Image (cartoon, rainbow, N blue to C red):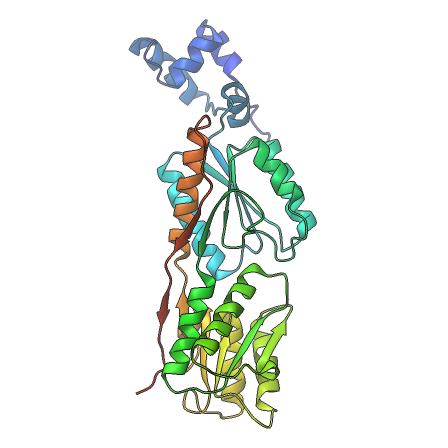
Amino acid sequence: MQKKPTVTLKELSQKLELSISTVSRALNDHPDISRSTKDRVQKLAKALDYSPNLFAKGFRSHSTHILGVIVPNISHYFTSTILKGILDEAETSGYRVIISESKNNETKQTEMLKTMTQFGVDGILIALARKTSSINDVLQILKRLPLVMFDKVSDKIPCTQVIIDDEEAAFNAVEHLINIGKKRIAIIKETENSFNSEKRFLGYLRALKEHNMPIDDKIILSTEDISLTNGRRLTNLLLSMKKRPDAIFAITDNAGIGAIKALNKFKVKVPEEIAVVGFSNSLGSTIIQPALTTVDQPGSKIGRTAVKYLIEEIENPKKDIVTKTITVKTNLIVRDSSFKA
């Protein structure tokens, strides 16, 4: 089927015998244009299926009302909840959103930043790729466009950042395990260069220190990919130890679910022999048996908050923006994997 040619503003103006500026203002319901002219223009535009070119419009007005969003992994459950909040708040505020995925690759992240500026977005929301070694590209963008970071951030980038208190959330999770009587608590975390993982590790260490519990490097396990498969694999290592832990804190739900699967396979009683706590409150945390105790991260609220601060910067370009860190509160949801009757 042959495609219809795109109708332009110029063609509308020629058919109506009006100037391009008059047609444009009529389509935008400008008060200087009479009701009868607006009706004529809008009727023809509808009949010809006219659709405005947002990028051309943005070039003229220096505003596209489009936000660029870059995330490391679009399929991650927590990320999807953040994106839902971003989309809802942007729509409420009259903005459209372009979403792209860096796939946790720094080179791809740089490409996406360039693409966003080429699209003429009004501002950018970004969660950094896991191993972002250089922040120069982000700093360059920050000189040209409003930029707000969320979830995976860097304290070296002077912009508004929306996060949870990973350290405090981890502290509360480990303290919960201590309060139910656990004495030897293992952690499954990511290898270095992960902002979130290191903050959660600090929370783990702080909880042990504040409760005068020993820190044993043998039960501090790290993996490059903090997945269900590696959660299961590392739990198998813990089970092979002569002195097993009596609890596992996994810094993601996937790793926690993997831990429970390994414990179930070897008929280890959860939580009586080994309790497990995860992080994220994913859908899988309620499906696994026993259900996983986990830190609930309010992804939608993080997304909404990030959009609000970005739009405030976009719409107040002459205002001196005070960069700030906004911390969204988390909650520990206690389920059967650590419940003490």
